[in-house]
Amino acid sequence: MHDSRAVMRSLPLVASILGRRYGIQVQIGGTEAYTDGKTIHLPSLPVEDNNLLPLVRGYLDHEAGHVRETDFDVLREATLTPLEMHIWNIIEDWRIENKLASIFPGCRQNFDWLITHLFGSATPDVSATGDASCILNWMLLTVRCWDVPALSTERDTIASMVDAGFPGVRQRIAPLLNKVRTDCDATADAIRHARMIVQALRKQVAHSSPSANTQRKTTKKTTVRDPSDGPAAVEEDSGYYTPERIRAMESLLEASEDTLPKTMGAVLAEALQQANSPSWSTAVAVEQPRLAYPLDADAIAQARATSMALKTRLHGLVQSAVVTRCATGRRGRLDPSRLHRLSVSDGRLFRQRGERHGINTAAHILLDSSGSMSGCMTLASTACHATASALAACGVNVGLTAFPGHYLTAQANWASVSPLIRHGQRVHSKVNVTSGGGTPLAESLWWTMQTMLPLPESRKLILIITDGDPDSGVQAEEALVGAARAGFEVYGIGIISTAILSLLPGNSLVISSMGELAPAMFTLLQKAMLRCA
Image (cartoon, rainbow, N blue to C red; front, side, top):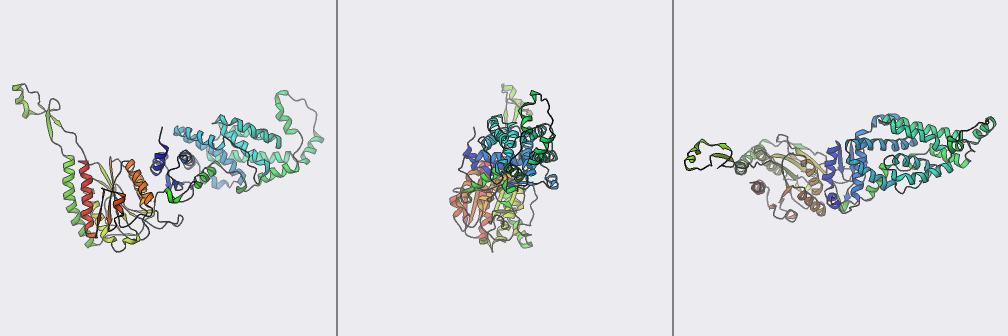
């Protein structure tokens, strides 16, 4: 069994893995949970709440099904009424969940737990639409019982309420729901079934009005009914709805979205939003690139000189980590220069290669571009460019990112990053970024880990360059714990500020001027490379 608390503390990495598995994007941050048709957005969530994990996993699976399987263009063109949309949601949720479970069988267990958790004690929601809302609850539980038969007791309880208040409704709708199970392969099919069900409800209202009942009584002929027809046929033709019941049905048919019961996705989103706690939660930065300019000729020349020196010194470290001597043994490739040993019955005639240790490393430089860095961004960008060039020349897969990026108006914070050199991209000189904003170190670390996690390199290094305290020290420490747990090696350089020393004791340095930055970066990289040797 997995440790729920450990998973929650690494939620950004778990969400990233699930997103890649499902072929979708997952973002964490802000106060809302929603899906825009392309990306699933999770709010900042408390890492200590173990009860949230199954809800988070269920929400991701559920919304991933919509992103992958729902045709939102067809849905927009359909222009459904609120009631049609609600019934479509009931049908479409069931359809996309089964589609996803057929591709990823592990999702079935998540969905079953979620359905039982949400609907295991279902009660009619009669707010604003009267007792008629029990019809929707019965439809929901009927569909959900197809996969979770344990809900049959709740379904039957609400079914009796529907029969008592609105006789004949279930007899009209049940056959239509049964068709859904065998004929619902696309979003358009779910829309068609939803419209048919709403049309059946409208017919039931017309059929059960006092005027329609009077007309039936005057034209009704005595017929012999087969007992096998059951009591349902009697209920459909017996009596009429009271004016209150007619008004309840009409209100249901004309209900607005706000007065209808919440959908499964809305219930899940609301539960996650209620758990939101920005000051003690995990969030991930989003990409919001800020302006970046090419380094000028003097800066490039300086970077090349520094890069050449760093490359020469780093190359020696790489060589010591890669080159191994061959040994002589009793197996391997025959070494003709050792044949003379046969005269003394020495069987060590074969050349054996020692185990070859390659660098096999990816490194990412996180450059603080907050407002306090104003005036020294060019020097910092030049040093980062020199280091990135030297690492790339030694075969290290290098990336460079400035944080923060642009201000996030929707979230009212600076939790953003501006990628300058992506992994696999050739090192270029357009890395001279402007400065401004706060220091969202925790969010930027989670973003960096998400970016590096799928890289094939076995070693992953992160080098932080900052001149101050992070916006949230608690969240930064939590992110560093998550990095260590995931196997990342994190190093830091503080510019005048000593805050980095408490965050990364033993793996950080403090410099007093920008001229010391390049040597300090080499010192930390040398330490990292020696660990590999």
